[in-house]
Length: 222
Length: 222
DNA sequence: GCAAAAGTGTTATCCCTACACCCATGA
DNA sequence: TCATGGGTGTAGGGATAACACTTTTGC
Image 1 (tube, rainbow over the protein chains, first blue to last red):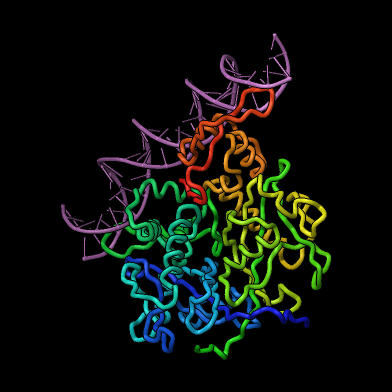
Image 2 (image 1 turned 90 degrees about the horizontal axis):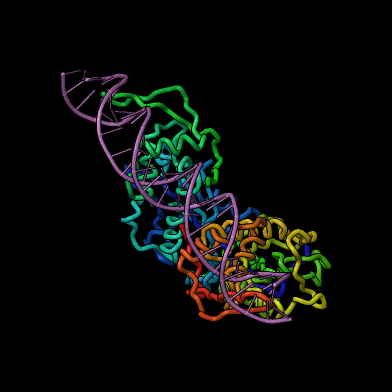
């Protein structure tokens, strides 16, 4: 194998912004750093890219290792390459963001016992490295994509009601939506299938259950 | 300085998709590779990230070295990290795309004499590495951004007519636009300033010259 | 029968699209 | 005066936004 010997080689990491909706709030999964630098501070989960894995494989591996969650939506966000963003040595990070459905979040790290914890976005503490900026950019992307894609479906469990879906939109956008208009427009997209089933969870009318017509597909709309 | 010794370090490059509009067509600047691998094949200009420069600085440096052009619009596109995308060794590339105004393209590489050449998009030959995919993604991003931002202004010289601007839109989108509707919507954005000057270049009515109200600013619209 | 969330249509407004003729200039 | 690109307004249709009451169920 030819080597490109006269060039510097650089440590490369992936960091993953993992979003989910828990307890009616948009939350992000952070890990507490066990060693220097930034020991004891919270940071995005992430780690070094190995020579024998693709960058995306690395992000998926980190995601699985930190949360135990597999098969969730994962999208490359942006690469951060300032010279001194890591005090140890030159490290470039390729950031991803992931969406975890409501019902998968309990698998690991949902408890406070672990060194990983879900934080409501407004309550995120100081973060290591440039992770605050990465988080902000991921949040921005998530809000934007809500408007022109079906990405919200990636945060839903296999079956869900229209009210639950609407709540996800409202939580992420931070503002209420009109129920009738929401239903009209989401159904007009044709991306939902009626399961025929209903779910009642109290002394009131049970709701129709839907599922994503095409799982694992995010459609760009408009 | 602490070292993260147990992790692999990886060669990192930037590759830049440089677009401009020349002779009424959208073109991309390619360079002919002078050495293996892919010797003699056309490729995106790019090179290795040095330890003492940020990734964006690297992209800007490559851009200047290949075209002599500075101060043009440059935006990070995506990072490509498949394990064997380079036959020599593991190389991750962070791709950028750049837009060069109509009048700046002649500085270098505009002639066929150089080892760099502008190719109309439809006439791009086989490219080295995964550069075909990178080019396709950049093209897609350019078209998309035309629809929801003022990015087209980055391809204009300091002063331009509305007809010239409309032509840029038409060339990139590959379809004609209605003159009156175009003028209405572009002026309504408030991103153009009337210079008060006019330009006549023939035996007919001279056109009003405009300039971008805020240079170097790409506004997201809608 | 009551409490709670599910479900359902219509109207007004705004935005986008389609479309054709006169204007200013240099030769 | 003619050839050429520059410049302008309106009307119809489709999409979006605002808005309130009836239905279904468990207790």
